[in-house]
Structures are given as C-alpha cells and as structure tokens.
Length: 140
Ligand code: HEC
Image (cartoon, rainbow, N blue to C red):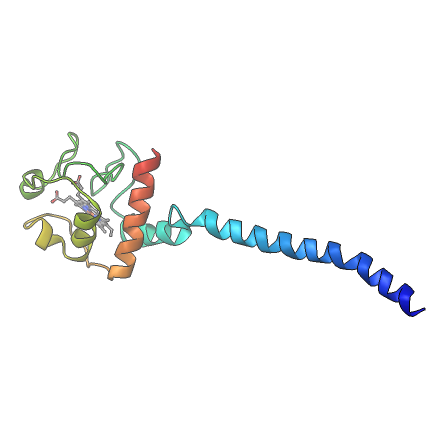
C-alpha cells in the first residue's frame, strides 16, 4: 500500500514542476520584452507632458514641431516649421543629454526659445520621455 502511494506521487510531480518552470519562463520573458522601448510608462510620460503640442510622426507639426527622429536631429532644422530665431540659431544636434536638460530647463539650453506655456517636468519623467523619443528615433 505504502509503495503504491509513493509511485503515484512520483508520476505527478514532474508535470507539475514542468508547468511551474514554464510559468516562470513566460513571466521572465515578457518582463524582458518590455524593457528596450521603455514600455508603456515611457509613452505615457510623453503623452502627459508633450503630446498636447508635439507628435512623433514625420511632418506632423502642431503648436510645436514634430519630434520624429529628434535624437540626432539638428535643433531648429525642420524646413516647414516656424521656429523662434533662437531655436533656429541654436547650432547643435539634439542628443539624450541636451533633450533631458531642455525638458528640465528649456531656457538654459536655448535661451529665448518659444516653447510655451511649458511648466517643466521632474527628472524621472524626463528620463522616461527621452527613452520614448530614443525608441521612436531608432525604429522609424
Ligand atoms: C505648450 C506646448 C508645448 C509643450 C507642452 C512642449 N513643447 Fe516642445 N516645443 C514647443 C514649441 C512651440 C517649440 C518651438 C520652440 C522654438 O521655436 O523656440 C518646441 C520645441 C521643442 C524642441 C525643439 C525641436 C527642434 O526641432 O529643434 C524639442 C526637442 C521639444 N520641444 C521637446 C519637448 C518635449 C520632450 C516636451 C515634453 C516634455 C515638450 N517639448 C513639451 C511647444 C511645446
């Protein structure tokens, strides 16, 4: 009697262990899959703070110029957007560092810019927005 019980437990254990391992694997891989683009939180940060005035679609200028491929783009360089004189003459290429600082204190990066009314955002939000802009810059 004893030994029969034991046998039936031995038969059931491996499938249960396999399902457990599979579940772990699935969780781990979906968590990893979200990381490269910064995921929903990054897009959400952009939507909250920038999307009223900016789109990331090519050619889609709103109150602000479109931010399609902004990482690596020259400041004030879209031909069909009416920039302030200071933005046109900024004379640098946007990189992650410049973008982050511009979100925190626009006037310290391009003094006299007309990105208004813009109240600024906390630096952790700025980091998410940069992640989002990088992701869209690389994939389009
Ligand atoms: C109230 C509207 C408004 C909001 C909100 C806003 N912007 Fe702007 N943004 C503008 C305007 C207007 C300009 C043009 C500034 C100029 O010509 O001096 C601009 C310019 C820019 C530029 C320069 C683009 C280029 O082609 O050189 C960047 C980069 C930028 N904004 C990023 C952001 C980001 C990131 C956010 C969100 C954190 C944001 N902006 C929020 C209105 C806005």
